Length: 76
Image: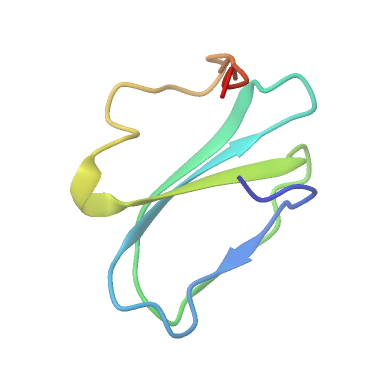
């Protein structure tokens, strides 16, 4: 997770990315899929953090704007 963050770039990446932009309540405010290497994603005004995944994982396939993500701390 990138935080604080509301825009990303894929300079020097070798594969496509999916980016999930979250607000301060971890609610999805934008989803960008298949971002090509050497691209810039403009800032998302409401976003305060970003999750990035390789597009090949299809990690964002079942997520929608307005969904809320819950994070849990590991006990290790």
